[in-house]
Length: 192
Length: 110
Image: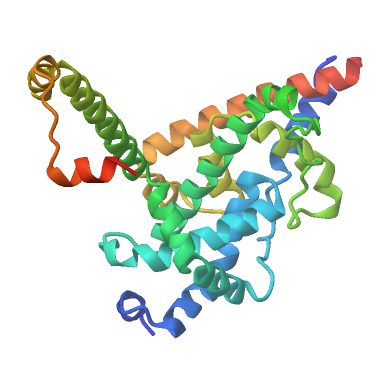
């Protein structure tokens, strides 16, 4: 089935077409959201949300880009919304803990290790993902799409609605910031 | 010289994603999405979703405030209008006008 045919069937709310869309792009969406959210349960939740949105909003898809680009865009935007919500929760966690009798606090999950990392690189990748969390959200998105998903600058630009040169600049800044954060981390762990 | 091992570690960390494999979403994702969509389509979820919309919620608050202010305004206006019955009652009291009929006289006696 060609992509325009698939889109047409999806617009008619065809169940088989929707199943094909999910099965074709589920790993792409899950891998992207997992790398951004660094939590398997959250990534699964956002992946489900993404496909529900795809099914509900396919009518508004203008076919100006490929279907996979549009799905990527939804997934990244949903993952970033999730991160923003979580950050807000963390910010108010202290206040909540004052009023909450159970003293519940929004705790950071244990250190994230991406399941696709080679065994010998796990420790370095763990530190890198920790550093990645400290970057601005647009730099995080560009870095994940380029380094984890292996997309070209042009593809990253289509998803983030940026020019290739803007993606290049964004990734340059992301790498410079990561270097700085990693330097600080290794210096602290050497001294302390 | 002192920073050399740190520089090496930083480079290693940056290169750790070079041969990363894609994580898999696991089986039965489609089934879970379908059941989630059915759940979201239930009547109560749709009603609560509609009420939770900011525009709807703000609209409801506006209507309640409008009704409250109307009630306050109308009751304040009603208090300012002099009662028409007052002079009539005064006249009735002054002249000891009592509306009675022959049946009342008969009934007053045991």
